[in-house]
View 1 (tube, rainbow, N blue to C red):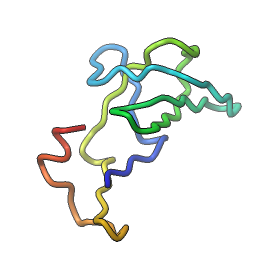
View 2 (cartoon, rainbow, N blue to C red):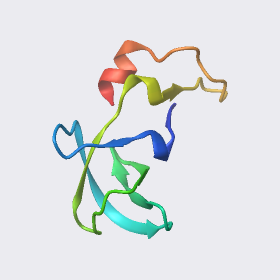
View 3 (cartoon, one colour):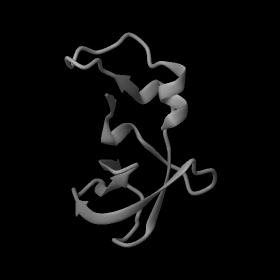
Length: 87
């Protein structure tokens, strides 16, 4: 299982790796939570960037924010290269 904390995803309009279709925007005051589906799975991004529902959120996933877990929920020390490239 791959885990990514919403506040560690980088919104990057200049060099996006992935475009996340925004389904719901939840204002938090200092930031917003953007909800969408990434590779068929629920995905949440926290950012102060200003986007609306229906837009594409340009994001980057850096290796340092990816957390891998085994089938029992135990965190693995380091993501496998093929998992990082699949993201």
